[in-house]
Picture 1: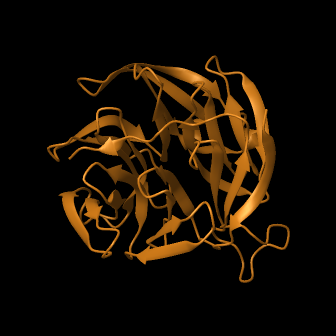
Picture 2: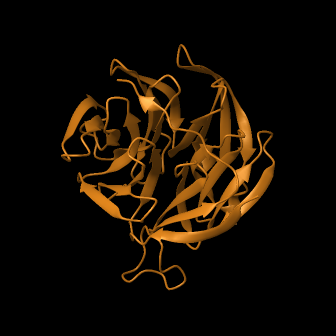
Length: 292
């Protein structure tokens, strides 16, 4: 076992920290302040944090095989040159609808980018989960979604986990990696409502699920059969995403938020909106790269 003690790594005071993503080529962690439209690049060795300001919102990011990032923004998906800060919108989505925005997303084992949408207020099941293929075509894959959040795939690539937060569940689909299709949706994990709202998620090298709990002050780990294996307390209520990183993929990075906090913040969580880190004694997996 490792050390589950959580340490503050970057005291960023993000409004809505999200989308933690390890980049083994750059040796850094990428993450976003979703509502501020800021991409963070954090060096895990030193804690140095550089930012790229895009404006608008950034729901999620993924690595590109050709370098840089693929990013889901207000009105679609585009490519970010991380050296110049130039962003190119290549896949318009939900353009012109001011009530909708992108949210969590991830690249699948075949190099496709999956991204969810939701209403800003998160009150109606009018969002969806989309698959952006390598030819930049877009296909809706899951409909009637309220708050599209964490997703990831099993190590063998034969199943996909997915969170629509208000359901208080992590659902499991059968996944056809070659075709990119989903089937046989069923609950994999039930999150008690009094422990928080399931948000971002990752699957580790042992196929256990790590789930960030919004308003839950914690990250939780579940076995593949849905049994709660452990809880890691975080000194911020709004825990948003989790990702393994570091040279050995044995560091767990945790993003948080301070959404709708009063001016000056909440006295019981002065580092809300920060990036946290712990070493839980298990390893993650290398993230996939968008092949488009």
